[in-house]
Length: 306
Ligand SMILES: Nc1ncnc2c1ncn2[C@@H]1O[C@H](COP(=O)(O)OP(=O)(O)O)[C@@H](O)[C@H]1O
Ligand SMILES: [Mg+2]
Image (cartoon, rainbow, N blue to C red; front, top):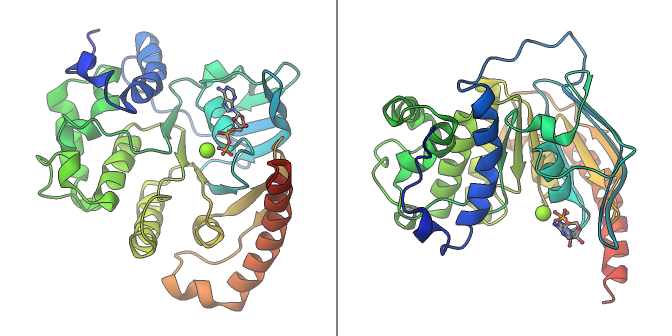
């Protein structure tokens, strides 16, 4: 299989591009075994897609995660909040198959005991930065993962073109990243993640860098797209309102070493209207979550020696 990266040597000089290439490796490796993504069989009702127990991760003398326990059921949108440095991205790297947890963990994928690396190619991952390649236009950025997976450029472009209107990008297919607004760039990166159809989508603070108004619009839009496509999503955010508005459940992580401090089910009806954020139910949830988060943020603030 030939890799369809243009200007790879230029890419290595562009901040973020190497990170992107790293991220695409898993799909490349999976492609060797299965060039076209096979639709995964449905799970029995109520069976988790991912079941993690006693998951710890140590980097040298830094314990990033300790005895983390997380279950993700098919079709769920689970949000994760926690102080910075508590291991959220580390959790994602494990689920994306890029890092192995410390020995002694239990990690089950579709009920089977697994190594993190077994998840390679089963998970699509949108990292914290949008990582668009500046020399590729919208459509060619969107199809990157499909191409690396071995799909022909023509076929991949066809699929992406069909998706453009839904992602608010109709007519922008030939624009380059520096010609787009922040919200549009994030939608291109999200479209790339959606096009790469996998069992689990990991979104690491996808709206973190956007202004408040754009962010609210993007949240509403993401809920629509998620409901339509019925994907399983794990979504990291710093924003409690965002975590509640989007999530079926919110996981609050402790200060480092990270574990799940609180698992809050969000029983707000769907589809969720924007004004749900002013409802008493929403406000009560927010109060509970903020208390849990503030306690942990304070701990990490003190540890950091401020
Ligand atoms: N590859 C790595 N090597 C060494 N330390 C790391 C590595 N990845 C993360 N860490 C450390 O693990 C801790 C958790 O990091 P991270 O998962 O990025 O936190 P978060 O995403 O919650 O901000 C931090 O102290 C970070 O410095
Ligand atoms: Mg992070």
